[in-house]
Image 1 (tube, rainbow, N blue to C red):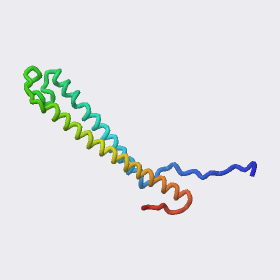
Image 2: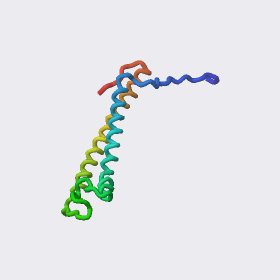
Image 3: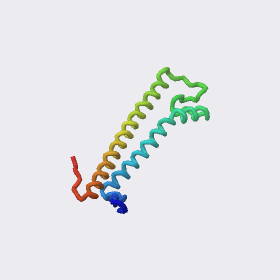
Image 4: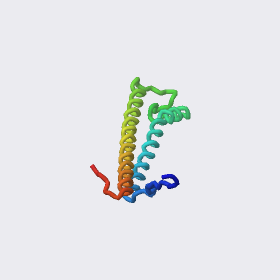
Length: 123
Protein backbone atom coordinates (compact mmCIF):
# COMPACT_ATOMS: atom_id res chain seq x y z
CA UNK A 1 0.00 0.00 0.00
CA UNK A 2 2.01 2.84 -1.31
CA UNK A 3 1.12 6.27 -0.08
CA UNK A 4 -0.43 5.23 3.23
CA UNK A 5 1.10 6.54 6.38
CA UNK A 6 1.40 3.94 9.07
CA UNK A 7 0.02 5.01 12.41
CA UNK A 8 1.92 3.77 15.38
CA UNK A 9 0.39 3.80 18.77
CA UNK A 10 2.49 5.79 21.13
CA UNK A 11 2.54 5.18 24.81
CA UNK A 12 1.47 7.88 27.14
CA UNK A 13 4.53 9.51 28.66
CA UNK A 14 2.60 10.50 31.75
CA UNK A 15 3.60 8.39 34.74
CA UNK A 16 0.99 6.30 36.48
CA UNK A 17 -0.30 7.92 39.65
CA UNK A 18 0.37 4.95 41.92
CA UNK A 19 4.02 4.42 40.93
CA UNK A 20 5.36 7.98 41.03
CA UNK A 21 5.73 8.26 44.82
CA UNK A 22 7.45 4.85 44.90
CA UNK A 23 10.02 5.80 42.29
CA UNK A 24 10.56 9.22 43.83
CA UNK A 25 11.03 7.68 47.27
CA UNK A 26 13.51 5.15 45.91
CA UNK A 27 15.44 7.92 44.15
CA UNK A 28 15.63 9.86 47.42
CA UNK A 29 16.91 6.74 49.22
CA UNK A 30 19.51 6.19 46.47
CA UNK A 31 20.71 9.79 46.81
CA UNK A 32 20.98 9.52 50.60
CA UNK A 33 22.88 6.22 50.39
CA UNK A 34 25.32 7.62 47.82
CA UNK A 35 25.87 10.67 50.02
CA UNK A 36 26.50 8.42 53.04
CA UNK A 37 28.99 6.33 51.04
CA UNK A 38 30.91 9.47 50.09
CA UNK A 39 30.93 10.73 53.69
CA UNK A 40 32.10 7.38 55.08
CA UNK A 41 34.84 7.19 52.44
CA UNK A 42 36.05 10.66 53.50
CA UNK A 43 36.35 9.81 57.23
CA UNK A 44 40.10 8.95 57.03
CA UNK A 45 40.78 12.28 55.31
CA UNK A 46 38.84 14.13 58.02
CA UNK A 47 40.88 12.31 60.69
CA UNK A 48 44.16 13.29 59.01
CA UNK A 49 43.05 16.91 58.60
CA UNK A 50 42.06 17.00 62.26
CA UNK A 51 45.46 15.61 63.29
CA UNK A 52 47.28 18.09 61.05
CA UNK A 53 45.34 20.95 62.64
CA UNK A 54 46.39 19.93 66.15
CA UNK A 55 43.28 17.94 66.99
CA UNK A 56 42.93 14.41 68.27
CA UNK A 57 42.24 12.79 64.87
CA UNK A 58 38.60 12.02 65.63
CA UNK A 59 39.60 10.22 68.83
CA UNK A 60 42.61 8.28 67.51
CA UNK A 61 45.21 10.31 69.41
CA UNK A 62 43.70 11.80 72.55
CA UNK A 63 46.74 13.99 73.38
CA UNK A 64 47.49 15.14 69.84
CA UNK A 65 49.90 13.86 67.23
CA UNK A 66 53.10 14.63 69.18
CA UNK A 67 52.30 12.24 72.00
CA UNK A 68 50.15 9.76 70.14
CA UNK A 69 50.40 6.30 71.66
CA UNK A 70 48.07 3.89 69.91
CA UNK A 71 48.11 0.16 69.58
CA UNK A 72 48.89 -1.59 66.33
CA UNK A 73 45.23 -2.49 65.93
CA UNK A 74 43.64 0.99 66.00
CA UNK A 75 44.24 1.64 62.29
CA UNK A 76 43.12 -1.78 61.04
CA UNK A 77 40.12 -1.65 63.40
CA UNK A 78 39.05 1.69 61.90
CA UNK A 79 39.60 0.41 58.36
CA UNK A 80 37.64 -2.76 59.10
CA UNK A 81 34.74 -0.78 60.56
CA UNK A 82 34.69 1.57 57.55
CA UNK A 83 34.79 -1.36 55.10
CA UNK A 84 31.90 -3.11 56.86
CA UNK A 85 29.81 0.07 56.85
CA UNK A 86 30.63 0.71 53.17
CA UNK A 87 29.68 -2.86 52.23
CA UNK A 88 26.36 -2.55 54.07
CA UNK A 89 25.64 0.74 52.31
CA UNK A 90 26.53 -0.80 48.94
CA UNK A 91 24.13 -3.68 49.64
CA UNK A 92 21.41 -1.16 50.48
CA UNK A 93 22.19 0.75 47.28
CA UNK A 94 21.97 -2.45 45.21
CA UNK A 95 18.61 -3.30 46.81
CA UNK A 96 17.29 0.20 46.09
CA UNK A 97 18.34 -0.04 42.43
CA UNK A 98 16.65 -3.45 42.19
CA UNK A 99 13.41 -2.14 43.70
CA UNK A 100 13.46 0.84 41.35
CA UNK A 101 13.92 -1.52 38.41
CA UNK A 102 10.95 -3.63 39.52
CA UNK A 103 8.74 -0.55 39.86
CA UNK A 104 9.75 0.70 36.41
CA UNK A 105 9.10 -2.72 34.84
CA UNK A 106 5.65 -2.80 36.41
CA UNK A 107 4.93 0.70 35.13
CA UNK A 108 6.00 -0.29 31.61
CA UNK A 109 3.84 -3.43 31.74
CA UNK A 110 0.84 -1.39 32.88
CA UNK A 111 1.48 1.15 30.12
CA UNK A 112 1.73 -1.55 27.45
CA UNK A 113 -1.40 -3.26 28.75
CA UNK A 114 -3.32 0.02 28.77
CA UNK A 115 -2.15 0.69 25.22
CA UNK A 116 -3.68 -2.55 23.99
CA UNK A 117 -6.73 -2.36 26.26
CA UNK A 118 -6.14 -5.35 28.50
CA UNK A 119 -5.36 -5.85 32.13
CA UNK A 120 -1.68 -6.15 33.11
CA UNK A 121 -0.35 -9.48 34.28
CA UNK A 122 0.78 -9.37 37.91
CA UNK A 123 2.68 -12.38 39.22
